[in-house]
Amino acid sequence: MEIKWDASKCCHAGVCVKSLPEVFKIESGEFVIDPANADEQKIKDVVSQCPSGALECAD
Ligand code: SF4
Image 1 (cartoon, rainbow, N blue to C red):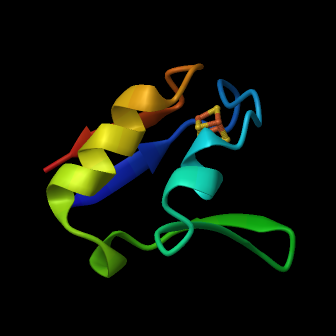
Image 2 (cartoon, rainbow, N blue to C red):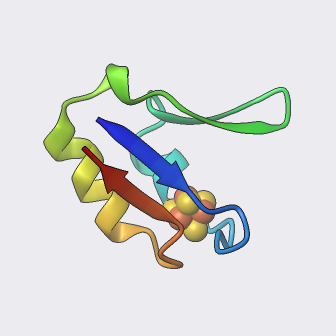
């Protein structure tokens, strides 16, 4: 599964990073998404909780 992130929409609420830190992380100041580290349903749940709509699942 591929996850798209729109930096211009992200309001940096941190919901994704707090909910699923093994997938959504900050590395060297860069936002990194590593979808291989959790099952798809968990990722979809977090994507749907993003308050700004910056995250999108693309299968
Ligand atoms: S949950 Fe959405 S708005 Fe919040 S930091 Fe993650 S991508 Fe940005």
